[in-house]
Length: 372
Image (cartoon, rainbow, N blue to C red; front, side):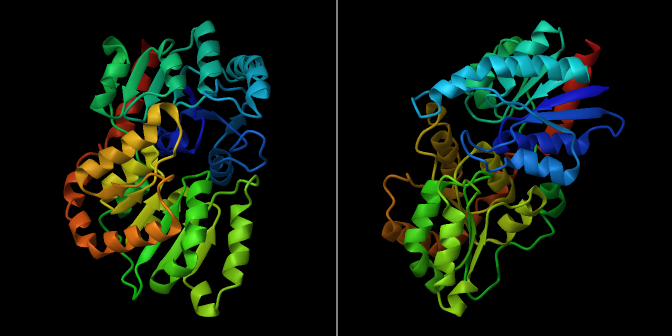
């Protein structure tokens, strides 16, 4: 059995990793993804770095995306679309997969088109509550569509859509009940993350509030590695200017390895994050109180929808980035921590929203489509 997995970004690669953990050992696998996290930036992507670290066969693809607003990369991106289709065709012909399993992202489109032309079965997995533009396109070619939430049924043809859930890596299930919750430190621990690529808006917010935060809290801050903004280097310099006791309260990292994410979340008293569906799924399963700051732009305000869903469970709060000032940010952190037990009380309910068997269900569908 030869399986080609497509994952076009950190949020798409996390569930792919969960499925890779569960695949039969005899299966031959190739992952196709981005080498670089952003267009016009040399920062390596989460999926590329993780695949290299874990020894997962990985082939990068260069293709363009349909952008919803004009940018300095719009023209060059459009010109890459034929390149992507040519590369996708060659990848499939060389690897000869029995089935393609796509977790989405714009790079999935040329792979799906090429797979359809070569009559290779396609299984699509949608992580979000809604449906991204790329997955809407890929769904036209897919033989089976796996969705993570019942709400998503409305976006896809009923006759080929199956509710599987959004798979989490095995570490979440292995350590969720055994690891301690909260920091048990004199000062509460804040874990700030912008996802695999980081979040410049959140980084700026933390930077403006840093002295105030460190008066009362420990802060672990995952900045991302984008060279365009230089957030990590700038914040390292800021940290170095603090007295030693404050430096010890502030830990900076560009990237948190996938196998350490669960521990990082578990030991935090409050998580401050974007609201990509991967992050949201992890927080729901672990029942971790969270302050969510959705990406201000994106497909159909997808992250805002995700964040509001978490807020409706009572586990966290949603704040729009454009409204938050550093002063208001500190105030809201203080308010949430003063009511932390109320947020924690909803953990049992949110835990049950995540299907532990999601990866196994997806693999069974892949097996079935191979035989079809």
